[in-house]
Length: 325
Image (cartoon, rainbow, N blue to C red):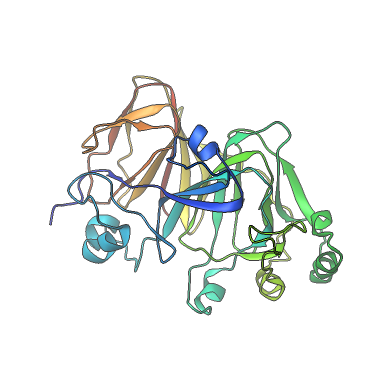
């Protein structure tokens, strides 16, 4: 089998939910249909609910799960994973999402079937004027307070509300109550989990005309009541190009801001890296695809790919993500 010595590109996996819209297509050029509920585009994923398929190069047609099982050392380097540990996606929050919370690894492993926990981070690709999100509970909110808010339909009153703008970053550890407001397009990096417990759904009906399922018991069990409100991330600048937005046990998230004609070299990390373009376009070295990596497109550098150079063909903003720890 050919070596994983080039950047991998995948077909996006589109998810339709009641809160989605059309901006995955109009803004990020995803291949959406005529419906108005395109909510998520899964860019890199190895999960029972979605498998990224390589779109070009010697491994075209293979799933990311296949690569994990057949070429683990070339994909991960010295680290060992049973499956690809991260999921990268774009979201179009055309309507406000449900108020929800995700479990940590220990809780998720006890579920049937088991899953990973879900710690995640958001980067705002676009925010309509006045757009809000909810991250964490207000200071002093107890479990009893949250239970009362659930009973009375007033969960929003105990949530920490943040007005956001393009480029803002928010870190959401497992156990943090949260929701995206409407008018947001988000890039999200998370653990490769699809476990979500809904606390509150704004008293609305699902696509079938019935209320969507809520998960009060599980939500209360996994919520971290000591965490309090979440604040916007303050980045740590490495140099004129690179800044670290989030560094945690599960992943490191950097933002690179490069000018047209500049060369980027992502090499220096011994494992895999995910690179996604939020603005502009770059030309990747050793890319079997004949096209640029444009806004809204993502690639995965396996550990075995040592030539990770790219040239910005216009002023560009990139997210660069690698394994944590």
